[in-house]
Length: 307
Image 1 (cartoon, one colour):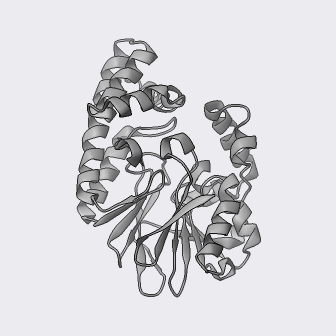
Image 2 (cartoon, rainbow, N blue to C red; image 1 turned 90 degrees about the vertical axis):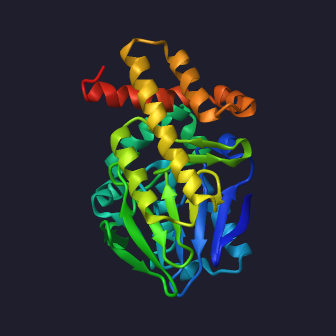
Image 3 (cartoon, rainbow, N blue to C red; image 1 turned 45 degrees about the vertical axis):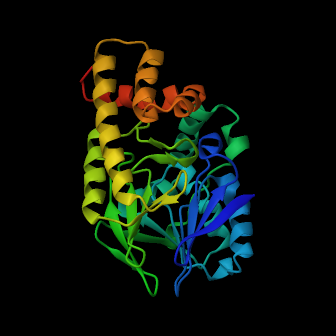
C-alpha cells in the first residue's frame, strides 16, 4: 500500500506506508498530471505494483504517461524504471546523457545490485526487487539547463553532482518546487531529521556545491524522494547546507585521527538530531548508518589521499 496526497497543484505524492526511516530505502515518487504526464522517481523495483495501484486510485490511465524521470541511477530511485518501461513501451525515460549507459547496461546494473546487497544484506533482492535495464530506444537524454515541456508547466533540468555524478534535480515552473532526489538528503519528517550525508561513491565537496546551486533557485517547495514534500524550502535548504558542512568537518577530523566508526557515527548523529532525543534514538538504532554514512566519508577521504 502507498499513501497518496496532492502535494501541489496536480502533483501527487505517492509514498510507502509507514515512517520514512523505517521504510528506507523505499522512496517517494511523484505523479505530475498535465498534457504530458510524468512520474518523477520510480523507487525500488518492488514498489511498482503499489505505484500502479496508486495511479489507478487517482483515476489516471498509466498508459498515457509521457515520461518516467528518475533523478539518478541508484536502485532506490531508478530501480523500477526498467520494469515500468517494459510495461509502457510508448513512455520515454528521461536521464542525464552520461547516465544512459548505466541504466541500459546489464553488467553495470549487476554490479550495482552487488553493491546494494553489501549495504542492505544478501536478501536485498528478495526484499526490494531486482533492477533490469531500460531499452536505449526509450531514453530522452538531457543536459543541465534543458527543459521538459509538460503542458502548463515545464521541468527545468539541473545537474547536481555530489551524491552521484549523474544526479539531476528538476525545477517545476508552475509550483516553483524542486524535485531534489538525494541532492538535499532525506527528510524524515516524523522525527524532524534532515539526513544530509554522502553514500559510498559520493563526493561531499560537490554535494555542497549542488546545495548552493539549488539555494540560488529560491524554490517555494521541496519534493523529497525519501520522506515527503515540504513548503519550508528556504529553511530546509539552509539546514541541509549547514548540516552537510558540519558533518563533513567532523567526519574528516574523526577519520584522520583514527576514531572508532561507532564513535564517528555517534558524533554525526548528534549533528543531525539537533538536540532531539527521539531523533538521536531513532538514528542510533538505524542499521544502515555506519555502512552508508561513515563508509561514504571514509571512501571519499581515502580516495583523495586525505586520510
